Length: 164
Length: 213
Image (tube, rainbow over all chains, first blue to last red; front, side, top):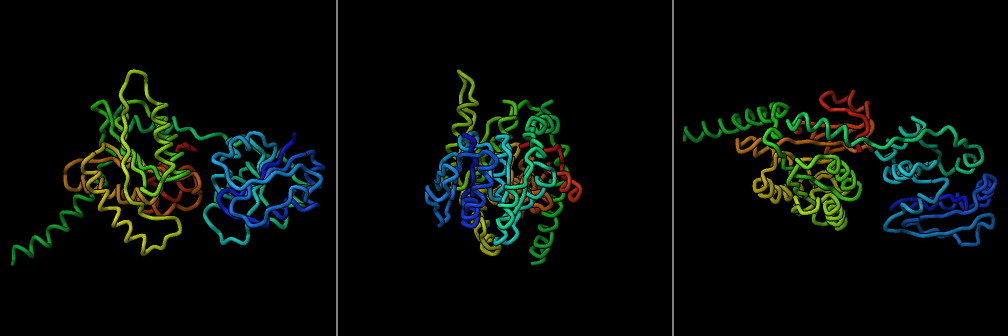
């Protein structure tokens, strides 16, 4: 079943959860063929009812030890701008839409999301433009984000400490 | 009295001279020539720990023993480290690692002034730890805990007891600006790695090898 996984990490981001479950957003997702909407809502106080969007099969949870399995099963990830969530989604090779919380003051976490957007690894919007983005976005423009190469670090270090 | 005044004047000069020598000569120091490199690995918490373990994973077996330092408020890291090390362990060999705890020097969002106090407090624990272990190298990637540990490692060199290489890897999250810890360690480290070219351009002493974690 084509699944959208929404994750807010350890934060609270009620506005995102409210927007993505509103009927217009749900319709946009359905029009794209998504059937299931899985929400990780963290410390948020807004908990949508399971029957609040009849278009989609809605599931909600707060936290899990690992969301790796949910990432793996997702066909689209919608995430807050947290670096951990962004890197996890890109590491799993999933199309990623980052929703910036413009109510939060600028923090360094945004730096990474912005750069990854500039380099075409993810799409980027705010809550007010989310529904529009879901309608018009083109996921085919996204480039894969290659994993880090710790071996180049090890080779460099071997040389400078005199092991090689 | 005169002798005292001369001493009081000489000691700081000597200290600064030694500091300069130790920081400047790090790039010529090659502890690996003796066959192995003991490493003090500063595991921060959460994401920091995951990232540094990926770096340690890439290092050959010659980087041993490995002494992991974790903050005493960190519950998850110890488990991650034990899992990682037992996976790395060759059959029929002894574990090559230890885990040590020190008080956390700075919680996220803690104010500057109280950070100074708790960093000084952490230094009380870092000094005996580093002086006892005397590692060849300190490897760290950003949690505040690494500042007092690197300061202790530096002091070993300043006192002429041992030159400890300080290797710092800035997080992939930092694209245009260094973290607070990064700004401090840029001055003290021997090898300073950044993962975005924009940072390398701003900080010419840094090493840029692309994304490494």
